[in-house]
Structures are given as C-alpha cells and as structure tokens.
Length: 75
Image (cartoon, rainbow, N blue to C red; front, side):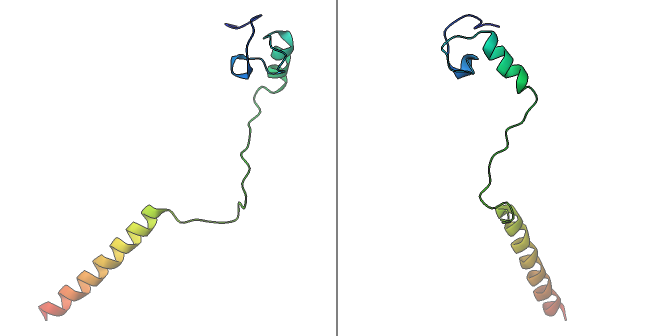
C-alpha cells in the first residue's frame, strides 16, 4: 500500500513489470498468495554428512581408545 500508484520495480510490488504498482499487480499477488517457491536441487538423493557429526564420531572413537588404554594400565 505504500507504493500504490507509484513507479517501482519488483521489490516495490510491480509484479508485471509495467513500471507502476496498480491493481494488475494486486491481482498477481492475490493469485499467488500462499504459494511457496521451492528451490531446485541437482540431486536430492545425495546425502552429505555434517562436519559436526564427523567430529562427534571421532571424539567417541578417541574416548573408546583412551578408555581401553587406561584399563590395560590398571591391570
């Protein structure tokens, strides 16, 4: 409503790119209200492990190795 009837671009509400924010732009907005744009993925089936998961895994392995080493020293 701030840019109604004014010249503007897409970011100001001129969705049909005619240079003016008007009822045609409001109709475009109403027709697409609630629709969500979905980003395209090149290969959605590819899983990539998070770096933090690898750090946790390495930390757990180091803890197990340290624990085994301390048990051997006690005996």
